[in-house]
Length: 426
Image (cartoon, rainbow, N blue to C red):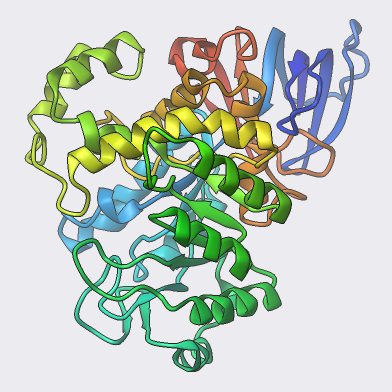
């Protein structure tokens, strides 16, 4: 396939290239060259996607979600088919890759394989290697392996558990470093070091869920590849802690996936004015707002994080995102939940809006949802960018997202989605 006459935003943060033709062969980008006016260069029978002067960027990545949230309420026989529909829904909105950081281990391997074989679904990346402390977060009560999460007492215990894990078969390793809200034990730092070392030895990235600045510091020193969630600050009015954390992460090369849309939803989701704001921002429609308000969970407090705490985390994350960006920390976009969103894909698009609203440049926002997300799980050489050799996932827009991020967020600007070299939408 040839995608003709586009401005290429390649997902690396580099300068856009206007008037380009992009050649796709066997599902990968194989050439990016100045557009030709003649059609003789197109082999007979070769599909052509006419870009008409539009903007081509890599397919978006949801770098932190939990598919179990979209399937656990259904009867077991219905879950697999439903989650396939969820992945198809992501793709329809330009999200070509999804990273599940805690799904349903009984379904994840089969669902991942199905997604890689079906160009009508976003490609799924998962882990069946997740660790927490005893009686930890998010599980309670059992020691050992439960629901895909292993509870770890100390470094020796971690070593014993790792003997039963085929790290070569997972996409990455997830650690919940902080303790369960309201109780439980934190994953011991020495155990975290053992787990991260084992992940790296197997060639896998270690993604670490934190709650505080102390958690973040210790996770970085243990070798974490990406910090999941923004921390609860010691003093919400003081930016010095964030500046110190940003400097530490930048020096270590640790990526940062703050999931600010999570804190926004948990802080304000029960307020009808928040839904009005989502409508005004193009994330939600009035009909969609009525559907959300009719959900059984609407307006109920989230049991693990009080709304007041989430307001602090949200406001502080928004104030400090530019601090991390200026320090040179690699930002990654992931939404975590879609509790007050019409679709999971819309939650990611909200995350991108919030990045931009916080003051992150649009070029860095796009990189956070493309190349940086692929880098987070060790796939940058093969995915997440429009570069020769990378998997041909792309989004074609009719307006410039660097000039206005709403051109990426609002679906009316979406002209086509390419998945593994095939036109998937519209």
